[in-house]
Image 1 (cartoon, one colour):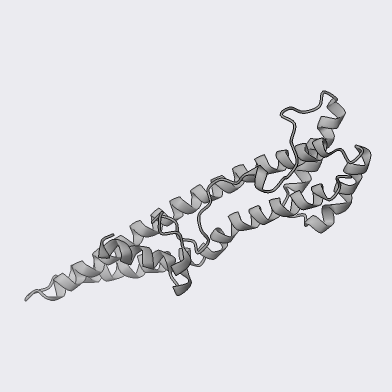
Image 2 (image 1 turned 180 degrees about the vertical axis):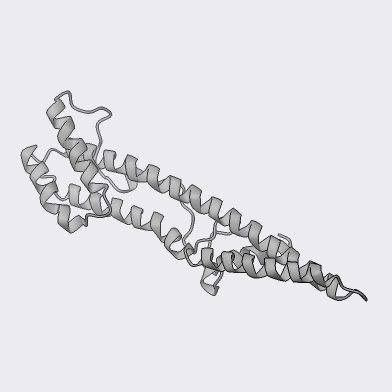
Length: 201
């Protein structure tokens, strides 16, 4: 890896804690290791049917519970009664509980994948901006070493630098939230799996 590339990555990561980041992907700015795809098998230990039951009312119940479980505005504690009611109404059937989990998993996994892709795009934008900032600094240094610097150009570069650095810093403030979001979705999926599995008799 070139020194300039390492400098850009260091700028994006922004803190000593970034040493734990996954440098196998230089566009990944998060301390958390990048895991692009999750597996239902690591969260749900029971077989999941390949198709929904024929009973449309049961399909509706599965979809309704899965939709509520997917809402991050609702805590899992708030949803425990909903899960218990579904399980009781359907005889604590592990197949149906598994289908609920599969529905939630599919939806939250797609959301998580979009967020991870967005983080990559964000990181590339920051890398591009940091390279622009470094290029402007180098041009300013070059101008100032001349016998007759172009002070109009230096003023323009300085103004652009101030603007770019402000944008860069403002964007960096959001990186912690962005990086935490996939982790929060993963934790929610684990929590949902445990609650649903806890209803199997």
